[in-house]
Image 1 (cartoon, chains in turn orange, cyan, brown, blue):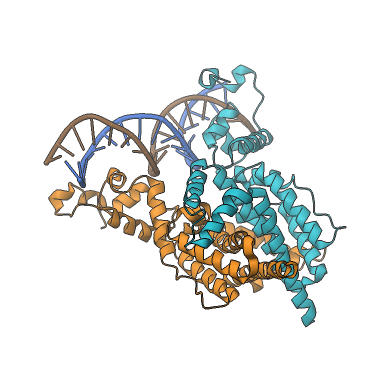
Image 2: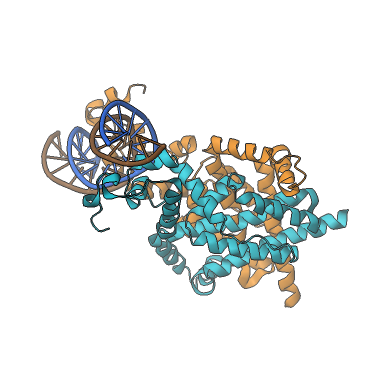
Length: 228
Length: 228
DNA sequence: ACCTGAACACCGTTCAAGT
DNA sequence: ACCTGAACACCGTTCAAGT
């Protein structure tokens, strides 16, 4: 454990079982939870498993293939949307559950936003989400509205993940805003400073964002219903 | 140009003027426009300028410092928000102008979302944007609402940029969706497929997203006004 | 003050050879 | 079938030495 290098040697001579894809993906998910998807390397993953990088290639594939497997696992942890609730409450719950799973695995949100339906576990989420919105009155606009809702959530989580990996940057943001706290000739910046520094946490802002997206979709529903 | 390596030699012996920060940043912006912020390397930037990587360090700083300078330049290209328009039209125009500048410089949107007020050129945008929303009736919620609007735009642009660098991934998304086109037991996926493949372009979806965010903020305004 | 050129400690990926 | 170990072509960053 401590002295990985000296523990090395042919797997077979150390009575280790043969490697397989399942072990590799589990280790990759663990590394993602600990360090973030973009902050472990192929060599590190191999090191965790006491094998050579080429072994990971042999059983799973290149970096993108391993990442796709990790993203699918993590999305698979999100509870399905509750079809018995009104559409608004159902989405609110879904987007919160999504945040819990994604924030536990930094970097996955960005890949999810990027790949969307290519993630197998995402297919059921899309299907049910779009159906619920269509039934609620959005009709042909349901796919676009679904995308607006899921994007507002997933993209915000992705940027939260990114910020967490740069504490120095957060410090800089806070210092910059602090310069304008109480400023009278730049009142907009002043109120942004007190909002960010004193009142709003990341979770509050996430909920606010989701609620405004839901408001936007609801307003659109009203317009569509009035016109039909 | 073609044979960079052989054209090398001490700058002074080739009658080249001394390097300076301005030239470096201009070259970095050009490389960003051509390849995207994440797709040029320090060594490439130095190569463009016929100098050594250490020279860039000497005049500007490490990679993050060069990037910060590029982001500031690009944001500086965006026309200021028009205070004479009603808030909704003013924001709609701002967010469209923002898209034009950012999409011309792939990868900048992500950095902008990440760093926010640390980008000097962003300070005026924030100040005026928040002020306009506060005056329009959002009061203390103006900073949060401003963030919702700017995020919905900038984060969507960032993910569009990312997708553009992976044409193979877009192909995969299209193929996956195509499997469900016309499916009768997964109607949600079927309508997502026709929406993405037949009806909605990236620009349409951008406008739809911005409009739904504006709807959401407007709805919140109505609620706040009614309660006061 | 500005530039040179090499070195350092990495990275993902590939591949021939071993068992 | 599975693993080994080295090699390849990169990367950002540092630094002593030159002019």
